Amino acid sequence: MSIALATALASALGFYLVLGGLYGLFFISFGAARMVPAARGSGIGFRLMILPGAVLLWPVLLGRMIRGYPAPGPGRTLRRIHVRYWVFLVPMVALGIMFTLMLRPVDPVNETLPKGVILEESAS
Amino acid sequence: MSHTYQAVQWNPFKWRYDLVVLAAIALFIAAFVVLTMASRPPGHSLTLIQILIRAFGASAFLLLNVILAIGPLARLSPRFTPLLYNRRHMGVLCFLLALVHGGLSLFWYQGFADLNPVVALFASNANYTSIGGFPFESLGLLALILLGILAVSSHDYWQAALGATFWKRLHMGIYIAYGLLVMHIMLGIVQGEKDVIYPAVVIGAFCVLAVLHGASVIVGRLKDKQASASLDGWINIGTPGKIRENQAKIIKTKTGDRIAVFRYDGKVSAVSNVCAHQNGPLGEGRIIDGCITCPWHGWQYRPQDGRSPAPFNEKIATYRVQIDGGMVYVHPDALPPGTATPPAIIKEDRA
Image (cartoon, rainbow over all chains, first blue to last red):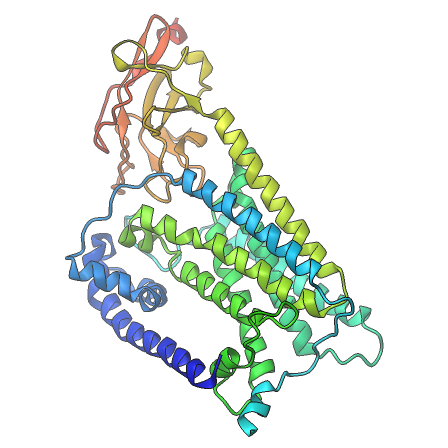
């Protein structure tokens, strides 16, 4: 990955978190109790506890706010999806393990020093 | 349950649970550091910070394995059910351990660059086609982000806000995080270390998890009673004696819904098998203090109307039940959540 692309990616990540932080403060102040009425009157400890969730999940919460806080659908067990995850995961991980073991260097070398790749690139 | 939300609903059990987990993690990290230092030849160049990076990474990975093992273990044997009650604290701890691992790695391997360490992390290695030099850090970062999303959305509030089904789907991301972490280790330290302990632990842990989950699925399917509709659409589930006192028999309707049929105090009632909290299997719980108690987190419902006792207001669907000719019949059409329906009286028990 080029430094320009890496910088853009890191900036996008930072931008997402800054927007999330702003929305999160709004959400814990005004939105949390509108979305779940049982949260009305909850203390500052609870609001701070849900702040990181609001920061990371802000697009989902914003979408729900725009749609007027629709009530979530009824819960149901997701056992079948759970099984599908495992049916997919087990062979994929097993193949990955086998593949990486087969291609493992015969005489691996410890990486005990900082890589310094960036230092070389930025110096050139 | 949703009376009032608190930051953390502590109780003595949770305190003990968390203290035991924290003590085990601290012991593991200390043992890892001491054993690694002791097993290295004199003059080795592995620094303490590098050993700590490995110790925190290893503890996070092993804790994730424990977390993923608790579900199938509890399904296979009720003795493990108490471990479910506070599993989310383990998940948050797993994320924090992984965060320390990631933070120390970023500081040690990228912190000396002229660039922003995060930019340096993305740009330092682009060998995505190489096995030996694969930028395994990117897999670890993705897994860390996933674990972070799960940790910050683990409060009960988020389930109520996002809906149980969405929340559950989101939290199935733990399986993706697990796969990413396995590959992070296999493409990382396993490629660069002679020690066989790393691949041996990863493969062993993965095999144990795969067997446990496979066994729990098979046992679950064997336990599932595919209900056959009898006269007038009512489902015959056998005699009341086939249901243990204060426990349930779970039946599966043709539409795939699971119904928990509870026997208690000479009566039989039927409710949805799905807890309103985290979709836990109510039929695997017991009746405690007159209420159906979810085996996962202890949420309670009255068997007659599927409502949580005051001051809580959760509701689950109920089903009509009757006893005819000594056999228990359940109607497969769910009544709206919280609908009161009279329990069937077991006459034989009163005789």
